[in-house]
Image (cartoon, rainbow, N blue to C red; front, side, top):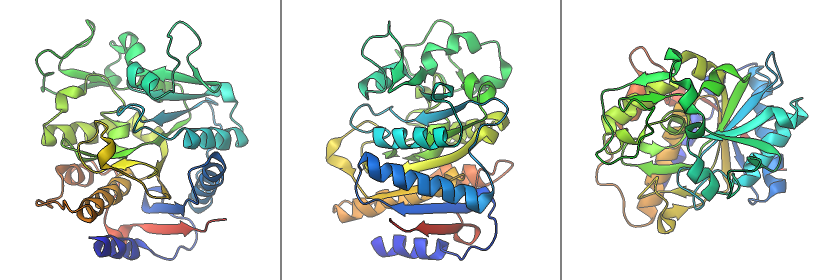
Length: 333
């Protein structure tokens, strides 16, 4: 399996001349360690490399605000590294954003608190190191009359699932602030396996990890894949998702996305792309390789329906075909 992954990455490697279409580009940067200093340097390298090769800049535009979507659904044990959050915020400030015009966001308040991005008390400033932190479950009550945000799917919540009184049980609400308040948003997913999607990474971070009432898709791979892809493809949400930065400081290969320390692994590498599909494809291969190395390889290697849903029909969120992708490996400094 390690040989297969190495072959995949070799096949993806192509020389790059001139500008590259953003969703055809994948940047890789090895990390010396997981310190603030290393993340700061590596993040700047990746963002600058993306800007140079695509001519897409991460500078303020009309709204002069941006968001950083983090992943905390697995709690303190498996969430977006704080050093990476600091590095991205600092990179955006260098590009002209005021600190007060950058906010962090995720779907739920409780895991944000467990992961240390929100303070223990809810009656004070909801900040992480001066950055505003927003939980969609605390705001979504006011979005119910906006049809752009409604994702309808007939799957109901499981019996006994807690549900806010304003929430239609067969609808999910996508985040209004990422539609209306920001020039763009960046996402920083964590990677785990998933019974629902096969891999819980970039596509999940932008969709079922970014909306209300999504636990109803648990243990239902085809519905979960359809929901993830259709929410990711919402035009206003999709057009403002400018970049994904994915660190493998900690990722989980079994039992996810519920945290299980025994199945967590680590690699000193980061990826950056505007294409969530190729990132999830690489993440899945990392999971499969780590499972094989641990002596518990997959018996079923059938590709999860997530990738078919994301790359076919009327919705094409990005390609995972080697011939369509240019990978640039940035040197360590």
